[in-house]
Amino acid sequence: MKRIVRRRWAAVILYLIGAASMAAAQNSLSLKDILRKNIEASGGKAKLAQVTTLSFQTGGTRNFASSTGELKITSGREPVITEAILVAGGKVVRNSSAS
Image (cartoon, rainbow, N blue to C red; front, side, top):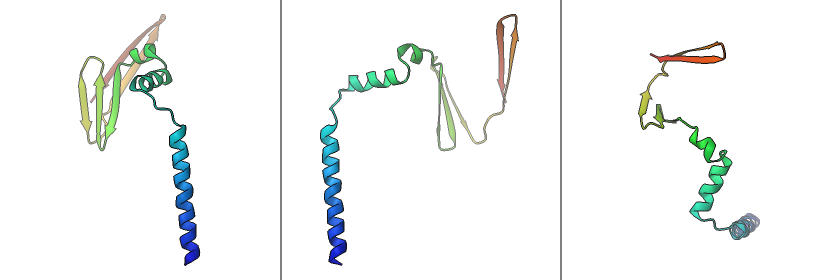
C-alpha cells in the first residue's frame, strides 16, 4: 500500500515540475501577436480576403455565412445540390441549384 502511495506522489511531483517548466518556457504573447500569427498561418490577409462563405456545423444544424452578410441555416437531412460546370472557349459557367 505504501509503495502505491509513493508512486502516486512521485507521479504528481513529476507532473507539477513538468507543468511549471512548460509554463515558464512559454512567452506571453499579446492579442495582436496571436492574431498576426493566425493570419500568417492561414495564408495571409490576401488569402483571407478571398473567402466568400464560411460554413460550420453545430449538432444537426449546418450554418452558412456569406461575406455579403447572408446567413443560411439547414437542419435535418443534407440538402440535395446539383451543380453543372460548363467550360467552353476558355470561359467557365457555373450553375448550382439546391432543393
